[in-house]
Length: 81
Image 1: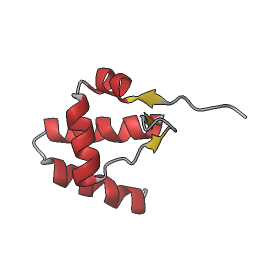
Image 2 (image 1 turned 90 degrees about the horizontal axis):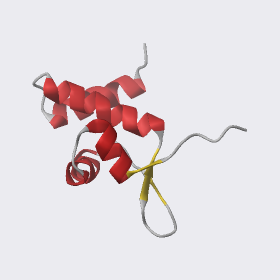
Image 3 (image 1 turned 135 degrees about the horizontal axis):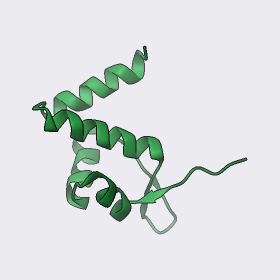
């Protein structure tokens, strides 16, 4: 079985260009992703989590609000094409 890579919040911040604070706030306010927690409480993100964050960032860069982007992703998760 191949293990999928996990990323710490600092790595996600570097990949997305978002601050760690923004990532945490998006989690809390919009439940864009719900990262797993290690025994020490550190967040770890899957590649799918990182891709969701990048999708929201791309939509906000296009002028959508974070809330609109999060709702759009939730709708697409429920109704994949």
